[in-house]
Length: 460
Image (cartoon, rainbow, N blue to C red; front, side, top):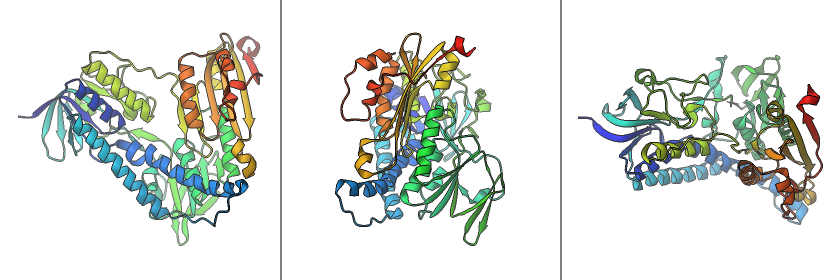
């Protein structure tokens, strides 16, 4: 007779692990199936290892800057295999910690791919066994998508393989303009690679505020990253001295590695969604309501597989809310408004709320405050870099509806600003807040002069 559980979770990533742990805490009998490694994309080959590589890449500039502060530093050398080995040890430790957390929560973990056979039955492909579940949660995440088939695509790597390269490429071409592309461009550039970034759009970071996009691009180019826009890679050919990459404008580059960071797609293939009657959304993800419930009442989905806001903290919140709603008798819808995010580029980007373009589309009047300044650390170092900050304010009620910045620690700063935005703080609230001096963040509470004002009536 098949084993029976209250909740069967497919995928042991951030969202699935949180949901399983909280549901078990409510007394549910929970089983989780994971075909790869416990921890999911973020822990194993995403946010965590990426941030470790970002830290490593920043040391090159720190060594250079130290001279301005009186330090004499011998010519530094970098060893890629050491970095990767140390990264692997840390990821193994985190995977073990995630596994232990599930075990302590009395969640059964099965290392197998799981396929839904009907709304209450899941088959484990590793053993062929079936499990009956009152509720099924799909939390399989997403995977890199290389885009259209081109000649030589077999020579291209994704971010997955970038974490395990045997050696640091001297020359690398990255196609893409989103989070992953600009972050890895900064990583490889900081570690000493010659980096070319190719993007099909007008500018990098589509969907971000236009001022942020322009400022980050300028800063990246100052650091020696070649950014080619309005072009795509048309073919990749293996040659004696590397890879010859052709672009749509017939320009070509010879590099050692080619990486595509052209987006990710929900991991839904072969899950048995059709058999269970689970409907997909127009975005290609699993269609869900505010409670993460699919078109099948006892089947739910959280995280990147739903293709809503594909960020780890969002998946965690969705997983927790699901468990509260279904097993804790605490109906908890998810509010996806004003979600802060950071891009760990060099320099960092931090944003929350509406861009100026979005604000103009929604509001009758928009007031903009912004500032550009040299970070204090850069003065003695002599580094040519600028921090950029921008506040977007609803001119009708003075509410802060957006904050955007590029500069050191942007991710740390934007997390705190997000609280103010969520609480509907006004520009006057910011003005009344005493500054912490000398810091970069003080600029957020000392911007007094409006850079511009837009009004719908005037525009029309």
